[in-house]
Image (tube, rainbow over all chains, first blue to last red; front, side, top):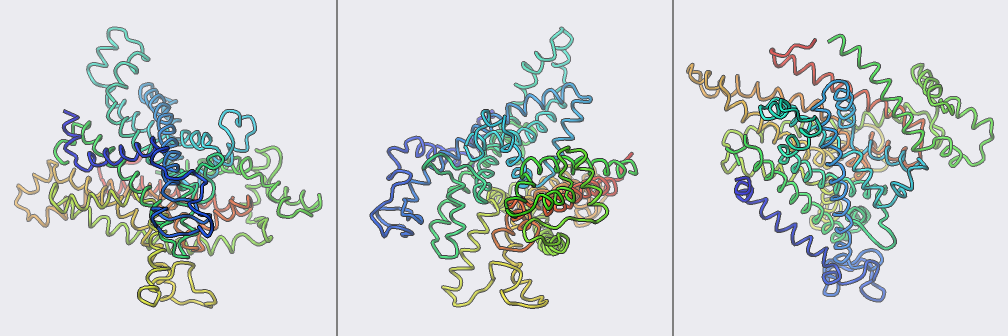
Length: 293
Length: 320
């Protein structure tokens, strides 16, 4: 039934296709990308060429093919989005479930901290935390250098879990009073067993929705950081969507529209597609939402 | 109520303490001082450490900073050794102007669109508003800013021969004194960028809130009493639908400030956001701390306002 409702959300179905095509393009980058990451399309003069036959989406300041670089960039961004979302959803589920289930002091503290962090301007917290974590020497072997992709993933995981924890906690608080939990407790199930076997499986819908939204916020977050020059320097020669969007900043006043339009378009398409899927998942898994599409 | 007010002072102190620690570890204020003033004498450095409360002991350092801050004995910025308050004041004024313009435009359009969509759930209006709001949410502010800049800074003048909206600053270079028209013109594009996000978010909130209210029992009661549809909608529907929206609005300051930071930076608008990014880039501790205090205070104040307005709008809720 959930599946039927998901399919009836037309925008979401289209989004699944768009995303699938994108992922295919990225996965098959040896076939789809026409040039290497740092390869220039032709001998100089080759910078800022508008879209043309040997560079479909134009070239950047040092003559690299924007189309190929977008494919490499999306790869890094998707990795960042997926991994940080998975980590933060895992942490968020555990913390949220325990907080909701146990209540009391633990719950109070966790939710206070979460509220505080979520009320703050995201970018400010992100930048301050980034510098702080980067400056702590003994963390470096675990979370990597300040400009590595791993560091960015850890950074978003540290933030991402809070929103998820809040959602899961709400779900758990609602489920806790239901009869089947009561029954499980009556036959002597341990707390951990109830959380694992009853609470989490029954929260799959909201968790999936949270997962999609974490992916989006990590991808957009990465772009935001990169836009202001605090993003990952994705290894020698690699690039990310954020770096490409950041380049657009310099290209605007000179009128190299392709450098601004195409990366932004890809970013918005990804964000929109994942958001639509999340929305459809929410409609499909939330029984109250049946009436309005 | 009083208790809640009383609690906000320790919260403020605690959060600023956390910010203090984070900034000290993250930006290493002493190092940035030495970097910008490479020939500073040890005595000078010691003086800098003293006035900023950068004692190696964090707790003692924080209290030192706090005493100086509260007695308005603010240290000068590292870069250029300038007074902090005049800069901060200008930035704050500019941001308040931009922010309030964006909030007024954004919230009013957002609410209108939300109501417009909710009056015909499932209809064509509803679907188009919903889709547009979705697109609005998915567009990060710097993307819309870049596109607007591209259109207005480059192509408008190329196509039509004149600039319609300037894309940077508050005034054109060389402008002296106050000029409302010019200022408004410079604010149009940044306002639009910030407002897009607000419109999208509020249209969705308002729509779902009003739909909830419209399907409730007391609406049916009101209708069955024979009150006119218009009166039902305004007196019972909108008023109740606004309650959750107001609360969310007050809790949302953080994300609006976030949007402002990004927007200001792209449009070279000299507000709080630009101030922050410049100071943060230099690790300029004396500039950063007062900024943080203002932001933390406003977040806490708006949280309080959310609680109060919730109780005030909904007579069923009592604050203890």
